[in-house]
Length: 398
Image (cartoon, rainbow, N blue to C red; front, side, top):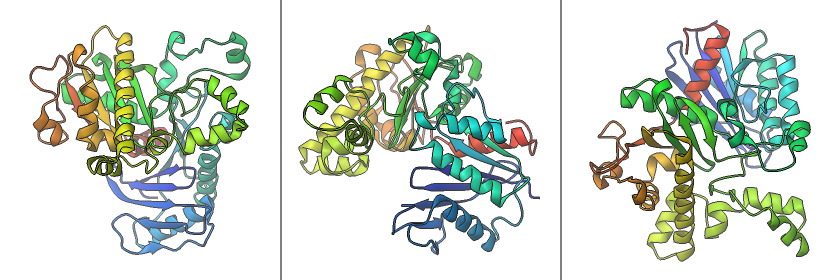
């Protein structure tokens, strides 16, 4: 058995695989997309040759093909020492990553109602790798675990208490693996320890969330019972008035259709009518497409409002951190967002922001800024690999 770790991240119609060595250096990665559709495809990153998938390939079939491709190309010569899985929703059952057994699988199933688009496919990946790699220790790393430190004032909704007691209706938060990585990396860049570092972490990608991390732990976050609450996202609306459901029902729109549209046809896509890709939106806006500029404006203003809201959780603040595909790569989004926060003392350096902090150890604030502003590339796969290694005893402590 090699001293390697395989990381599995199953999305609703995709799988990402990554293989790490014993020192947690990435050896290879692969991606499958459009699963269960006729044009399903997969490939190993950096490899021009695609991985053959039959039309309508399932998660199980794609995972089997991807592992086979790793073996055929001698990337994976033997069994890995551990396997780590991203699991979106752990409810209140999991405060940290755990080794997978029948009880863990059952608990993940119980949370499926809270993440119906994610937990079932996360389980499909777990079951497939259990069959492919019998006897190899496997770990579940939960998006929600990092946020289990939220105080009641932050996680309770103002609804009948019995809803929480009987059905677990509360705010759980997501992207916890990324935010946990930000807590550690921001502390390192600032020359501090995580336990003495307080940051606002903005994870901005197709899914977006923001978290108040005080002294290394999550104390408030934007996502709620499901990943729909909070910021404007690629295709998700973020916050809306719950009365919208009654209003649209009066117009003849059923609740399941409202739910589908709010998750799949809203956010940047809904506002622009064109795309959920921020790069494309910026290009369209620069060519005079007003709805695309409006989408950017709404996205940035909502983000700035949430940054302001997160300030309520701090006695002091060490930095504001941007991460995720948009957060790391869009100087325009960072600049427009910070333009709403002058009253709080945030100021950016145009030059450092243009270079995404790459020439300044992640720092992009100006000399006049009250607080540091950082750009830190996220690495959720690395966190999962470290946790799987730690739990399996295959490598040193994470």
